[in-house]
Image 1 (cartoon, rainbow, N blue to C red):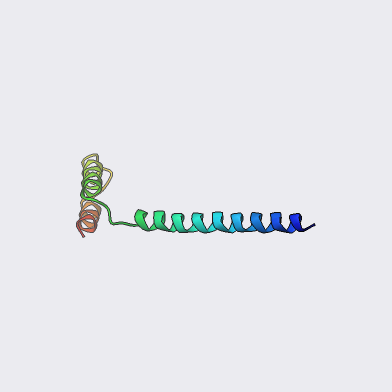
Image 2 (image 1 turned 45 degrees about the vertical axis):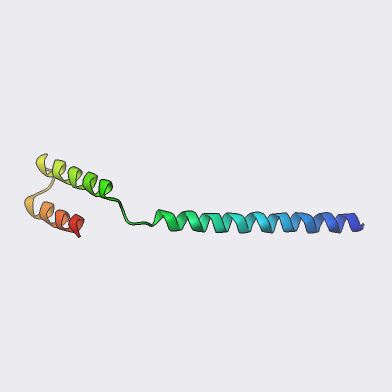
Length: 72
């Protein structure tokens, strides 16, 4: 019967270790994903905004508002 409890103990430790590793690695991955956008993404957003304005999807006031928001 002692082997049953030893097996349960080992499975429990393995499960706790797995959960701890996933939480720690997931936390690190989430922290890295919240970094500020790089300049290439900013340029891409500005390009899309310019294209939408040129296509007539945005009026001048909306375009200016969004452009100022992008420039920060």
